[in-house]
Length: 201
Image 1 (tube, rainbow, N blue to C red):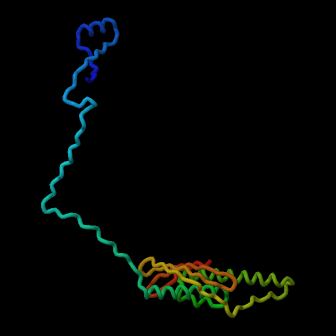
Image 2: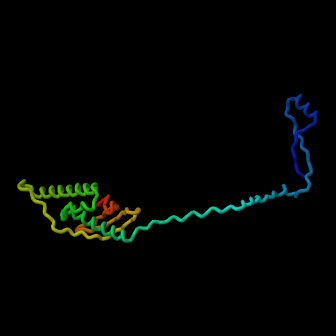
Image 3: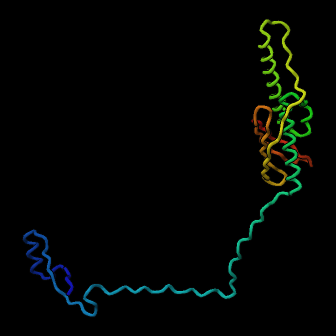
């Protein structure tokens, strides 16, 4: 049996509710439910989704093409590796005063050349100031000792091909008293490899 709550339809109940001002009363009717299991509502059956017929002559979409990965030329890798090592060693020798700056014109672009020149001048000025402090009497300023040899040994070089004709390199160099790192950006311009960025730590 299922319990169903319905509103009364008798006219007398409606007249009584209207006369007294009370809400209309609820009447409970018991309606027998047959044809289903006594434990509850009948089970819900899910209908399978209709399969849409494939269009005749339709071609499945092609697989996305595999992207071609760019690989650098081993010959260029070896050439750029040698350039990064040589330029780093030469730049450290310029800063040390054992190599003339003009030898770097071939390898550095104008901006990098000017930055290296400015840094070399600052090193010379600092060394001259240190030499003057060693001569406290104010006589003839002491001359900065000229280094005939500067031991710079390249410990390692790591290349990173960015794109065709562009490389970035990290070089580790050991001097007499410390180990220094340099970062370079090397680009192929008009058939010549040029250093477009040089940072020395």
